[in-house]
Every structure is written in structure tokens, then in C-alpha cells.
Amino acid sequence: MTWEPWEDAHARGQVALAEERLSGLDTLPDGLAARRAAETVETLVGLYGQCLGRITAHLADHPDLLERLAADELVGHLLLVHDLHPVPAETRVRQALAALPGPPELLELSGSAVRIRIRQSGCGAAGAEQAVREALAARAPEVEDVRVESGQADGALIPVDALFRDRTPVGGGACG
Image 1 (cartoon, helix red, strand yellow):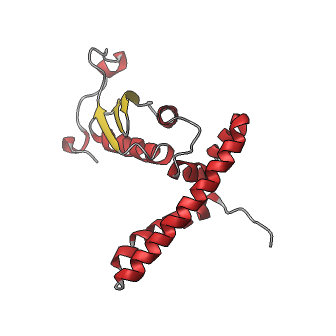
Image 2: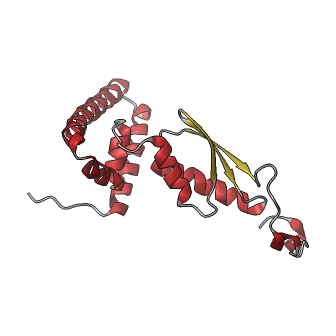
Image 3: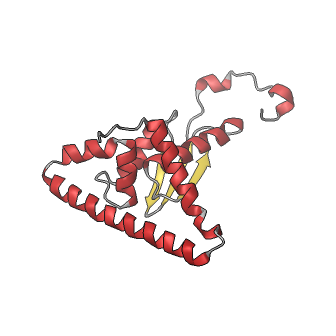
């Protein structure tokens, strides 16, 4: 049998399907079978985690190779699940934010909580906040508490071009 790599979109679909099926185990009518299935999955995940841990230990002398492996979306996700990702959470948070327009400002990172400031306010803030949440979920899923603040930093200057913009709200002032 030859191994064929999945396209990233297919891999994402398989991850979503696995998560859906795992979350559905609790709803099965046979509680004993559901518990046994969940325990079997936990055992397999633990076994695969140990195997990945051994692989990462063997790659300790080759950090560049381990980081290249971690850059693969699927492999990186698996390394995160087992707390084996070679890139620290703070670095991944900063990379995720740097890739966004603006970019958002990291105000605080503590354990699994982060506080971010986005420059958008008003109608654009909701979309920017959602983009921040999605980027952090993809790059640093262990950061579970994401607090987003809108607007300029205290004492920030108003851009000169903002002084000359027409201040008449479009559509009666409502967003959208």
C-alpha cells in the first residue's frame, strides 16, 4: 500500500469529522459502549502522543526539521494536541497577529489568556475581532480566553486624514 498525502482541505474536513464524532459519543443510547469507545480513543491518542514524543526527542538535535514539521497544518495541530509543539505559544500568537491587517496589538499573554487591541472600531470591529479569534484558534489553540479591545491606545494621535473625512453617517448611522 502506498501512502498518499491528503490535501489540506480534506485533512481539515477529517479533523472536523473526528471532533464531531467524538463529541457525539455522549449522546449514544448505550452508555457503556459510549464510555468504552471514548476510553479506546483516549488510549489511542495517548499512544500516538507517546510515539510523537519519541519522534520529537529524536529530532532534538535537528530543531529546524522539527519546526518545518510543526509548520505543516495537520502535523502542527497534532503536536499541539500533545503539547509537543516546538514553537512557544507567545511566538505563535505574535505570528498569528502579525499576519492580520492592522496588525492587532498584543497587550498581555498569561497562560491560556490573551488580551489584544484592534485599531478598528464601530462596524469594522466585529469582523476584526472574529479574524483575531480565528487566527489565534488556528495557531495557538491552547489560548482559550481571548479578550479583544477596540480603538486606539491611550494618548494615541488622531491621523491627520481622519480630521478631513466626511463625518456624515452612511445609511442613517447604522452599521451594515
